[in-house]
Length: 483
Image (tube, rainbow, N blue to C red; front, top):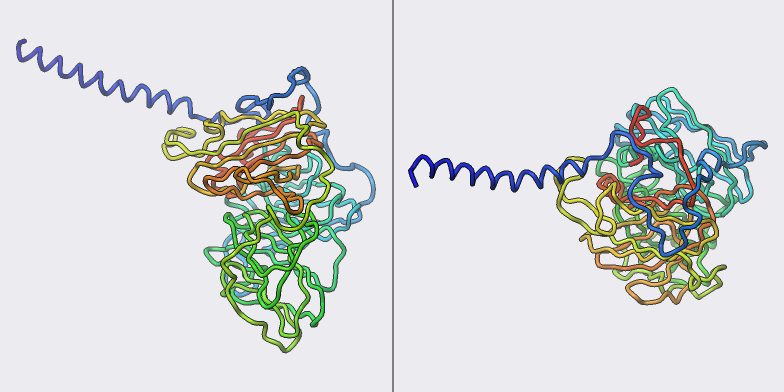
């Protein structure tokens, strides 16, 4: 073959090899693009969980109709104003972030079971817009506060009114669900407790600001004075993105509630409690004469709970951890998981590729990258079982909006303790949980990782009731960006 033809042939081979690489990459890049605006009710593909599809093809109710009470004088009437500003922590440091009514954490909202709660939310200066999501409270869908799903983000100068009945006692929190990975981290959140105030109650909201972990906005060791002999209920809220070991040192304590649900027959323990990101736990103990201390992670961050003039003991948490799979004793669930008519799998993995045109390692759900993820379809009244497995290499605190689920098993081992009701479940790497719940709150509900950067990287999908529609769009002119 002449030399010129050899060179031409070599170029063609090289070009062919290049195209063989670039064309598939180009296809993967193009198919990874997320539309500038999309309807969250039509994303991904429908997964019916083996149930009937006969009622799944008609238009039903819009999320805008699934509201709390529109009339009636509220028992709790609060105005919350969100600002972008520099502010001072309770312990002195300055943070450039977000506040609610000028502080972070924002003010405690207090309600009683049966109260009609009305919150007027005003966005004074959060440029990307903001919302309020009532984390762990099973509100009607229109009150859920998810930008692009149940409402538009509230723009600067705008306001939005939330109304719902406080139906279940417990410890909860509120936070923005617009650009939540930034706004929650920056301080746009606060606690809400549904229960009458009690003399021994302590609310401990844990958050990390600019690398400084705090309890109620205070670094280091804080203090609450309670007389010896007082039964203290310590309501602990983890607003960070990672699991945190917490517990009381200086006396045994009971785990009396998890994610707003009472534990049946709790017994005294001295072990630590692993609190997932977004989760809440209520710890109860009688204050000893020498006091006790809530420890968050290590003894360098604690809250002393003690009589006046005493210095409660300081110690690290023990290495062992309370296991809710066996803690407490069984009690009726109120439904039969064995009669489930929807059964889903939620397999969390990770793969290399493109997401919205960006190369990287991305989370997957059932082998699919966002937005081509399963839409879990249910009908009102369905008994739902879901198996959540994780082979992604990292742990994920999985949060289902609008519902509480009961844990049936972990890694194939059945739960034998108190019913473990949860809305934020830590699923470790190489762990598998089976959960169950009743589909009793119609709407379009997010089901996502509450390590919020993970949600922005694709670990997010929805539970949708048959026929649900929404007029809202993610992206677009409203600039809705829930994660």
